[in-house]
Length: 258
Image 1 (cartoon, rainbow, N blue to C red):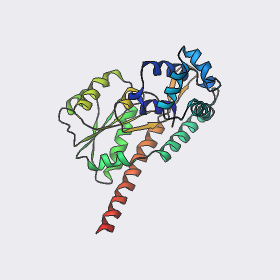
Image 2 (cartoon, rainbow, N blue to C red):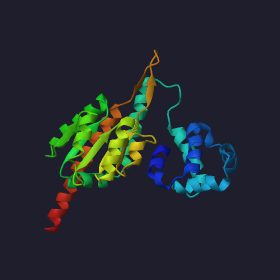
Image 3 (cartoon, helix red, strand yellow):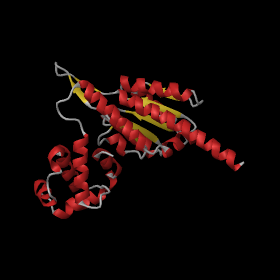
Image 4 (cartoon, rainbow, N blue to C red):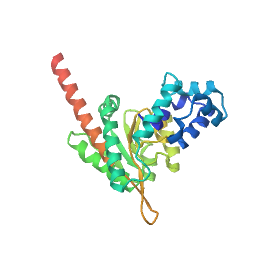
C-alpha cells in the first residue's frame, strides 16, 4: 500500500496539522526517511508528538515503522532517469502487485447485489475502459450502462437509486466539474466504485470502494507528457475476473448447503 492510498483510507481521521506534515513528506519522499522524528518535527515546525500521532493515525505502531515504510516506498519507486519502456514496465508490475493483494470481496458483493450498474469515464481513454468493462461483464449477463458525457451523468443520477451502483473511472480523481455531481450521489446514499490513479484524490476519498492503477507520466522530447493508461485496463479486467470468482464461490456454497 502506497502513502497516497493510506491518506485516502484514513482521510477522515486526519486534521489540518496532519495534512501540513504530509505535504512536506510527499514533497520530500526521497529524503524524509533519513530524518529522525525530532528533525522531521523541526522541518515541519510541529511538535514531536504531532509526528507520532500522524504515524499512528496512518496505522503504524510508531514513527520508526513509518520511517521504514517511507524508505521502502522510495526504494520501490522508479529512478528519475529511466526509459519510457521502464516506466511502463514498472507501472504494470506495481499495478499487478496491487491487484494481487487487494481484497475485492466487498466490491464484488456490491456489484452482485445491485439492480443496475452504470459506468462513467471522465475522458476518452476512461470511456474506452468503461466500454471494455461493459464488454466483459456482458459474458456473465451483467449489462453495464455506459455514461458518455458529464451532462448525461447529471441527468441519469436523478433516476439512480440506492439499489444501483456506479463505477467512475478517472485518471486524476480530481476533475472539478465532477465533484458536485459525486457529492449529490453521496448525499442520496448511492454507492459508487472509484477507479483512479494511485494518489491522494477527492474521488477516492468520497467512497470506501476504491481501486487504484499505477499511472506515471512520461515526458516526450517536445515536453508533452503521456500517462500510462494500460494499467486501468488491467484493474478493470481484474475486477471482472474477481467478480467471476466471487459468483463461482457463491454457487459452490449454495450447492453445499443444499
